[in-house]
Image 1 (cartoon, rainbow, N blue to C red):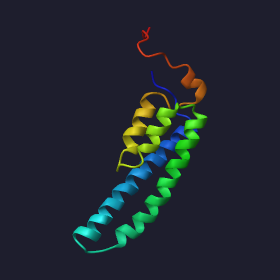
Image 2 (cartoon, rainbow, N blue to C red; image 1 turned 120 degrees about the vertical axis):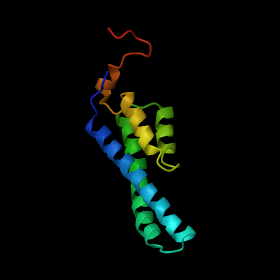
Image 3 (cartoon, one colour; image 1 turned 60 degrees about the vertical axis):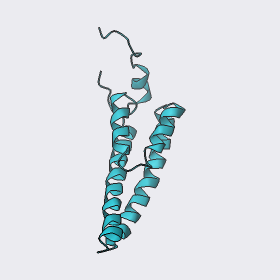
Length: 118
């Protein structure tokens, strides 16, 4: 069953992708700075961008956890997903698949695990 994504869920998904992309940019920038020693621009640009995206991700995750009624474990795992590179994208995909980005009233209609799909 596909769950309609709420506006807050869409915002969470967008910020999750931005956070992952800026993480990737920062990793490339660090490679250029420390491995090839060619430029520091990538770290400068993506460092600021990723810092902003990380803070935005944490804030939107907390807001989504409260407004979309996630459990504490789900909220904690979503916050922890911002630490390893690129983990916010699989987290967003899991939340979407489980209906956790839907409006709370739509999420309340979720069928229990193992329920027959009739």
